Length: 551
Image (cartoon, helix red, strand yellow):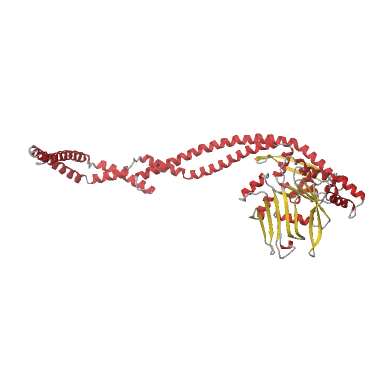
């Protein structure tokens, strides 16, 4: 809801403030007093472009500032968050035009572009000139209107929830298929590499151990010679070292009773003797293990060559690193298989979600098709009341091949303005004045069911009078009981129905003619409406008529 509009240094407005109430606000005044200029200033808040020609005082900037109560406007709050703009209430929207013509826009003191300003303020203010040729062309508006009047809120909610689930599965499936395609590009090659490593069947540290073993076999004769000589020195020579140590131990034991201090030495010699025996055993084992079998050597060489080739191929240095690559390849191939299974699961879930969407969409479509003849009839009747006696309004509901966010239908508002038998889309068939009245009729049917922004009608009653003007007034008043309405009018029937009456007038200020506005008190309002009926000096009959209209 618009709480306050402050305008400074715009056209013939020096300084002006409007504070409309939450219901039906009327703006009247003589032709040329500045009513359209006020709308022009407001259009700056809505993102319209401007230049320095609007400045009344070329030495000061133009500032238009609007305060909106947005506590209950969830859509606007979400839109602010999407643009990373802080939420504040009231939300202050400001437009500045410098003396050079440079324009800046701010929402809660955050600079924004005109595109963002236009997008966000569309959720706050609906100025019928813009609305008639833009919003009504959108499927969302026309569908929302039908669903609101047909009381499809529950069906629409269920469908939207199901459709979102379907779209999420559709998006996930697309991501997974892209991932699958990426993996499949390398899958065959990875399978080849994995099979090669698997068939090579290398064990941990095998290449390193084979390398050592083969080196030993290459020097086998020397190794056997050294080990044989070493074993002989320990056990098999004329004076083997093990026997000599045993003899030495026995000699020293013969004097241990006389020289007790020698006992620790004897114990150490026992240890040396035992250690030498162990060394001899191990050397004997090593000697027996040394092989110089050429066939075995050839087998080991082939094994080592395979290991070297794989190490070079994969750019690693050790058997462990090669085995890690094998594990990684196995995991990648397993992931591809798991992804294939996941894709099949998502496809199945998507098919189920699609069937659910279709079922709910068909239910929604049935209710829409059932409701549109009655809606069309009601709008046509209202159009006849508001000065379009030859108009025929029709809503066309056609089925679409693929579900969309609104259901299984495409909805078009059609109009035959003169009973010609030729229906066209409303925004193409109606004039500007007719469009505003059509929108008034449609919105009046949805007043209690839909969230609407502040609605501004600029002379919606142009070209009508009498009963048609009274019906327009009744519709505006009814709409104002649910939404904030600001209406510029020249019709006394409309002005009389307002809950707050603003009067726009010109006055002289410091030698300049400027536009001012004020709220009329009850008696002033009677006089203003009487002047709309009977001229500058209304008769008593005109005054009485004005009182009857207001009552």
